[in-house]
Image (cartoon, rainbow, N blue to C red; front, top):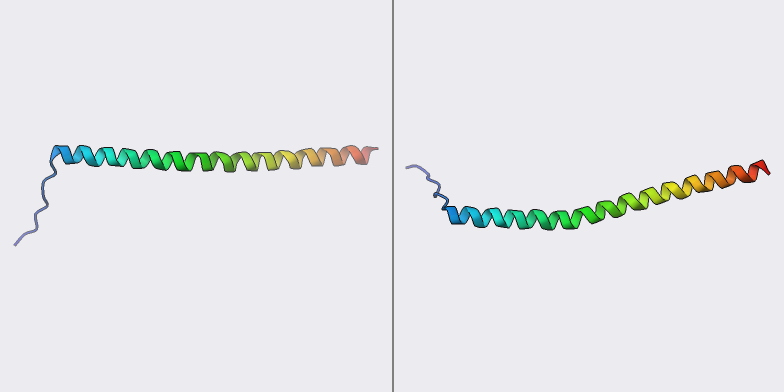
Length: 62
């Protein structure tokens, strides 16, 4: 007694392919803005630190 997988009909393959495309698109539309926001927040935080260090050295020179 053997186990036999059902054959996948072409129209089902297209439905699965379209579903996977939609899931991938939704994942990208969710993840990419989060990554961009995290990068921008970190970049701006680093930039503020550099500005503060520069102003500290200016005050020391006076």
